Amino acid sequence: MKILAQTQRLILREIACEDENDLFEMDADPEVHLFIENNPLKSMTEITKVIQMLKKQYEDNGIARWAVVDKSTNECIGWSGLKYFNQPLNNHNNFYELGYRFKKKHWGKGFATESSTAVLDYGFANLKVDKIFAMTDPRNVNSKKVLSKLGFDFRETFDYEGDPTDWFELKKTTWEVKKLDR
View 1: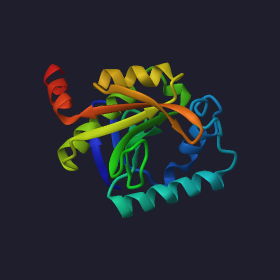
View 2: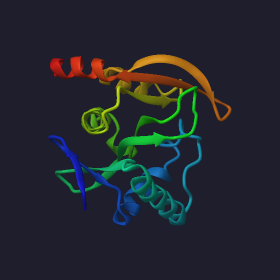
View 3: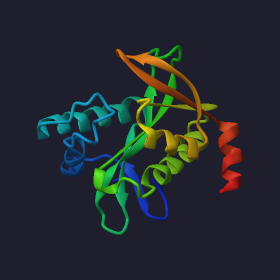
View 4: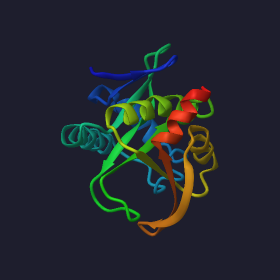
């Protein structure tokens, strides 16, 4: 299994079929999906399709969301990573978007910030992009705190598939300055 990044507490690697039970536990939880279409998964078949979709993104784009594994327990606690958008969204095209999602029992432990830091390091160093974007529901205060800690700047609220969505941007130059502060 290909490990893409590591932090003090976490291993970030490609999502694999063996992650399906952990990912289903996460994505079947209504609280996890409260700010994400409010549509928790109802069957293992659905998570199998998600994993297949991610594997296709790895193939097509060289990147997708990564499994986040707790080094101390070897549990897949969620995912974090970049998604490549090659279709227009909010007046942007051909860009990378940071996303993360964790099992509820792992919320509030700093895993979103820690894993996203590794993902952003990888994105700016390996993908050679000048900007990375992020989106969140305007009511998702905790996600907005994570994005702020990472150095993202709020740009606007836009309509995404009929729902208001906050749009954030992180420039490579801002990230490099932020790294000096760590």
